Image (cartoon, rainbow, N blue to C red):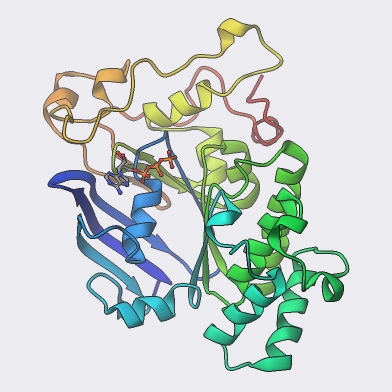
Length: 335
Ligand SMILES: Nc1ncnc2c1ncn2[C@@H]1O[C@H](COP(=O)(O)OP(=O)(O)OP(=O)(O)O)[C@@H](O)[C@H]1O
């Protein structure tokens, strides 16, 4: 049984649908990347799953965490799951850290809330977590306020707080986007080592295909509120099958090529409520046929471990230039 199974998840704001029936399963211990342009529904998928959307959102479908159904679950149940079995970290640590409470205290409180530890034991566990995420001299720095740490250290503290409940799944929503390249690499390494140590699963939400390739063994590509391609990271980089995925790769800057080698995807993501009939990507797609403009392509399995929502998937290995995983990881795209 998957750790989390999302089925036909739909979200609408004030009657306008922004998520159109997402199906996604996360297995125990795996790291899955969720990529796609801004506004395609990456964050809303998980905010809906965890009951964190505002009241005006209407949510339907199913999100199972083991035998628990999260859609429609009580506030008490969702509160115990959030920060407990499922933790979430964001781009901005200030969304999780309270500036007027000492950093170590906040982590100790999270430990007390989600585990049967109190007092000195919770404090010791908070110090252990601070050490685990690489805060030097953690015993002394326990009493510092968040502003007394650097931006990268605040990101580490937020990760320590997320780990306080011993989560089975960590949702990392653009956790490195606001950081400079060196710190970004350190935070990625930290997530990789924590995952090895704890065995927790990770959903890594990002625009950065390079970062995703370093941390995730599987990738889901979202476009305009739908998953359009799912597959192992290596296959996706070797040979993207959906023209949108191909477009994402082509839009990565190449430092080894002239300016004209960067090929942005023409047009923009359609606004919710103004979806074209048929495939939402068709107006921007060089491969679109009449069928694509009239019918929504279902997500269909191409083989055992990959699926694409496209009537004209690119053929395996037949693309003009192939992504080089190593180079994309270095932020270079491919030669
Ligand atoms: N509270 C809200 N009220 C109304 N619309 C919302 C709300 N939150 C999200 N949306 C809409 O839902 C859609 C999906 O947004 P979401 O934040 O999931 O995108 P995303 O893929 O995570 O983008 P980004 O990469 O920029 O974070 C967008 O059209 C967004 O405008």
